[in-house]
Amino acid sequence: MAEPDAPSPPDFYIAAMGRSGSTMLCNWLSTPPERIVFNEPFFDRPMNSRLLRIQLENLGMTVSDEEWAQADESPMTRFVRLMGGRLRRRRWAAKEVLCQEHFAMTSAFRPPRVIVTVRDIEDVALSFFEKHRIQENMDRFSDDWVAEYCLRESAGMVDYVAHLEASGIPFHVARYEDFARSEEDLSRIAAFAGWPGGGDPAANFEDFDRGFEARRHAGGERPPSRALPDSCIRTAGDLGDRCSSYQARFGY
Image (tube, rainbow, N blue to C red):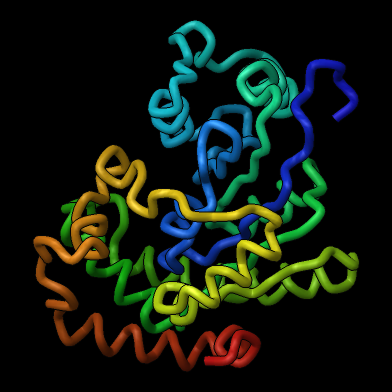
């Protein structure tokens, strides 16, 4: 990041397993405008995610269609072009949910510390099954997609943590089962990140088509929970057995 207009490096990176509460955690750690955690921005790709544009809009950093259009440039050049001015005098971090992105972000941005969010793989699968049915997008994310994701990403998370250990990069494992229920555990995560926390856990959920989750965590209207076919329950249990290295590594 030698470009003169480049933003400062991230304060930390969140390497998440999908459905591990990482979006809620990102939102809680974010206290705009000074401190911002970007949810799944794809900073290390030639084209960023739609979620990044939504977040920038909500932060008052609107990106024009001309700015947003994909250009013949490297991901880092695009990052500096789009984010250089917008992140000036701000502290920032980012979160992704694919191990491919974890390795790429760690290499490209060299975060000084990493928060690794995990969840019992059976509940990861069940949560995906439920989410895709509520959102009615199983044409894109079938049950087979869920199984493939759990098998691939659970193995990748074990490899990624081993990479952090071998590289000497400080990391903190944040288990959904702990930080979703414990203010003390959230405080430990904030202390590791060096940020105070206290942001709105439900920020952006409606715009991300996940309003049902915001209502659930707020104690409001609840959609049917775990109203799943027996086949999904059996598949989740089977995935727990097949992802035994991940389960053992993270205490499940």
